[in-house]
Amino acid sequence: MRPTLTHLALHVPDLDACIRFYEEFCGMRVFHERAGKGSRIVWMAEPGKEHSFIFVIMPGGQDRHLAADDYSHFGFALDSREAVDAIAQKADAAGCLIWPPRDEPYPVGYYCGLRDPAGNYVEFSYGQPLGPGSEAMPIP
Image (cartoon, rainbow, N blue to C red):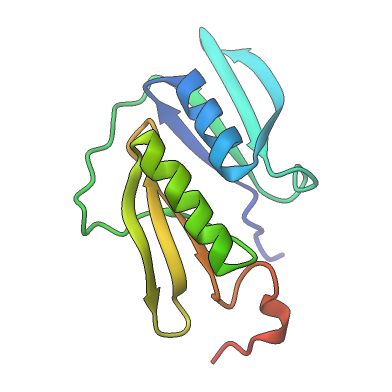
């Protein structure tokens, strides 16, 4: 049997702020919520992907203080460069843009980065061999 990646679990200092961030910027939604160990546990996913990959978010974590050149991140694919620019503008206005849009050689593509309320970095990209339209792109 081969394992399948199904979820990522995070402890965060402000659960509600993280829920709002992932709803607003990533289009995810809460589809399950329960009490657990004296707190709330929330399951979030992109609509239609509730059975393939989710974020499990729980209160109690500490704010992450990543360096500007730390590229640890969650990656979301977008369907155009304009969509990357739009997310970057929205994030800049919200004060959470950390990497302005930039273009890198294949397979990195065009991307920007945001900081979520827990300090995690979140990348939004176009032109990687993952996500919308990637079926037509070869992976070397």
